[in-house]
Length: 240
Image (tube, rainbow, N blue to C red; front, side, top):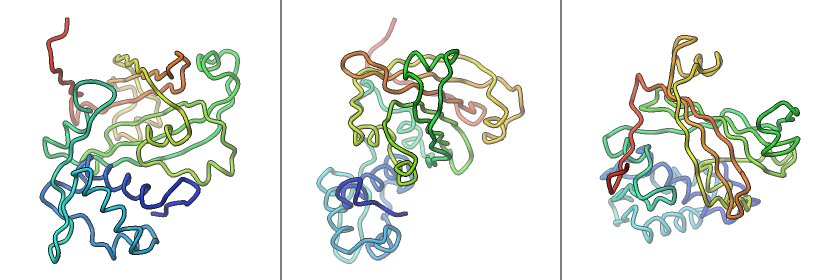
């Protein structure tokens, strides 16, 4: 995987990628992350860059580094902005699952006047399609529509590990999140990707994310193959 100087300090990009892998169980607690030479080869960067990335992870409490023993994962939790609870995927990791995220496609979308998105984004927006793998099996299919001003050449350079970190880097400051859930029939191409039969009912989540002024910056639809795993929500306090 390559990192790009255009996206800021490379050691910070690598740190975020490694942290995301820790949070999603790719690197489990009490196991070592890959050695520095392997990370240098994977990201095509210098030893100093890799060491600075690991130093950041040590300072944030995710790993510990011991001479002759490598770099061991010691924590896989994070402070969550969306709610007092933990992210759904973090709960799955705590239960022993691994989560891997892949970007399938990023493209410009022209919105017609009869599109429900046209009232949110105007005539154009960016579409980001992603899939989450649960223990290497397709589990969630996300399509995100975001208000970004990037051209086709810039899209080719985009690398997304954490979506919301990427949006922050693009100066999209999201302050409020509204989730809606329903039972729906997924489009055929999503059924194929999730390896479920066409016309099968699945859990659908719609998320509308807004900035501090109430302007919608992201609209997303996610389809969950709950035959593999139910959607989990935890609360610190009872809700009505």
